[in-house]
Length: 107
Image 1 (spheres, rainbow, N blue to C red):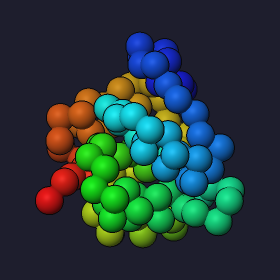
Image 2: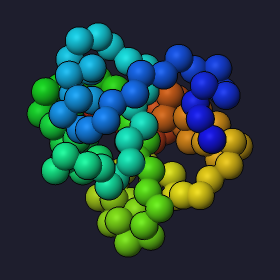
Image 3: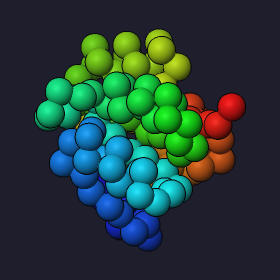
Image 4: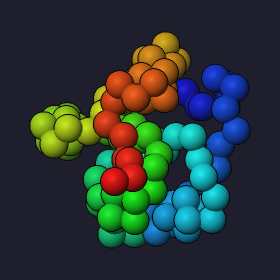
């Protein structure tokens, strides 16, 4: 299920580092990241770096690995477990944009 199907304009990044470059260049309403990513930076690492940089963007982490998803949830992250359908994605997006999920905020 893709965010474009829900009416969102999407910018794709191939790694955590390229996602940081996109987020540094302009603001985004939401970030959805897989927990497991290529390039040596996990989705959790990415969120920690966003917090360190004080980038204010709501975050949804996605994982097909139950152990990684459970660990991220224990750490307070909003996680969408794969496989998911359009309705679950929509609910997660609404929750994140409403501030119900974990949000990276400025202090």
